[in-house]
Length: 187
Image 1 (cartoon, rainbow, N blue to C red):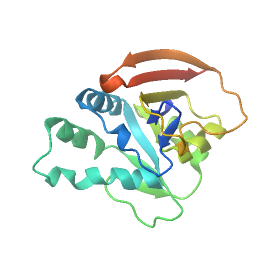
Image 2: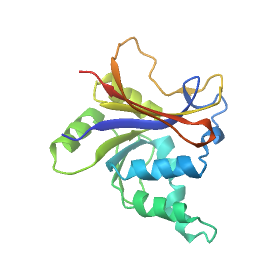
Image 3: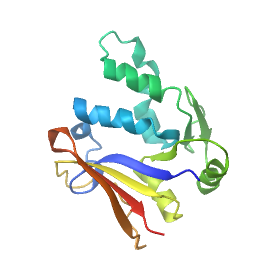
Image 4: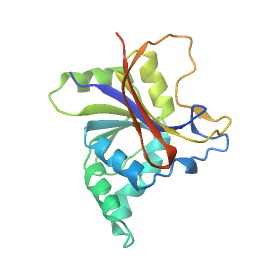
């Protein structure tokens, strides 16, 4: 069965964006970007909330820019054809290899798990991930911890009173003091 993973950059104090909505502190150096490229290779379908989808739209047309690095081009070659499901009640259309759903998140995950296919079901965006976590459907949390305290904003982990036991599966220190932590949910 396909794993459901939640992976995003996070500040040391636990936020994916700061109080001002900014996340410029997650801009990857070459080593961290290479890490993200390798991680997306393991993904079979990516589920996104509206905000992350709109942020990632940049890559749909970025290949037209002459100043792209080889790593940027490699990311585009992996990201653009990747199937995506965008969950939004405010969007009416999506671009690229994406389809739009306004509800049925748990049902969609169960459907994706049951169908044949390889690669993880990746969750992008803290709000969407909180809904998936509340349903107990996340199999792995993959945090890319940046050495910054932002003091508030949108938390990486949902603020709920439900306990979830985790097993540390992998750690890695990346460039610029970034630390990767991979935890499996103990069932």
